[in-house]
Amino acid sequence: MLDGVTSPVFPVQVRHGSPFPQDIFRALIAAGLHATEGGPVSYCLPYSRAPLDASIRSWATSCEILADLAGTGAEPHLETFGGCLMGQLCPPGLLVAMSVLEGMFFRQHGLRSVSLSYAQQTSQDQDAEAVLALRRLAAQWLPDVECHVVVYAYMGVYPRTSGGATALLADAARLAVRTGAARLIVKTVAEAYRIPSIADNVSALETAAAAAAGQRYAPAAGDTGIYAEASALIEAVAGLRADLGRALADAFRSGYLDIPYCLHPDNAGRTRSYIDPAGALRWSDTGSMPIRPAARPGGSGELTSDGLLASLSYVERKYDEASLDESLDKETADDPYPGARAACQPA
Image (cartoon, rainbow, N blue to C red):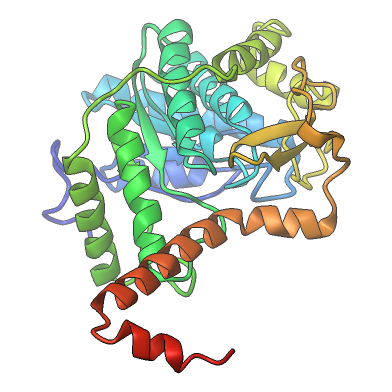
């Protein structure tokens, strides 16, 4: 599969999902590769019920296996999945903090080339603020590491209409350019239905390229406190122990880090989030984390099961409804007999 494909201008990155990746790392090295992804938290809490302590130990060993490649002339690279935790409904401050913390963990175990992830969420403006905060914090905490940011197109419930899915991907591409991200992980119009084909993926790449073409880097963004929130979380964890792996384990035990709606036994499960009227992700309960939520508008109470389901489908509905409205507008504009159509509608 790799024959004639790998080159410095076309690197191949192995994706997996394992909390215990030593054998995967050894296999990819044996195949002549040196780039992969994941992390001790981000490939444990969402994907498995493996003990977090065990995942952290395994990832420490795995990072060292990969870092040993540096002595062979290859530049080993590791991408954290920390900015994609749960795919959706995780407020950006925690995603940014987890991405930086896993990057710091990689650095502590010998890696000098890393990428930091961030998954598109529910608000374009909030996402832009988050990615810029991520870049700023990377410069502070990883100053001696070759580092870049990777934006992931939305990872939650995807729009079912072709127009909605295309518009969501286009917004992800614009976000990546607007914030100076180096790479974009695309999604296809088939995302809501099936595993995409090669043609689906090619079309997604073309859509993203077309959307990105009209954009330019625009570092100015609003400040709703994402940088301050992520900074507080990073500082709290880094202050627990010099060994960042043990610090991460302690942080989850104490609730300093707590992923909303994550059912893993090592996650405290006391935090909750909601989507505000403007479409931004906010905290309704921060548990024991060293941050405090802003006052929730209207004094509304806990998120109900119906409210959770509505939140999970928020992006799907937002983009599908916009796509259907656009189709109806076009249909009306193209109709040579709009009066006759209106007269034929039932009362």
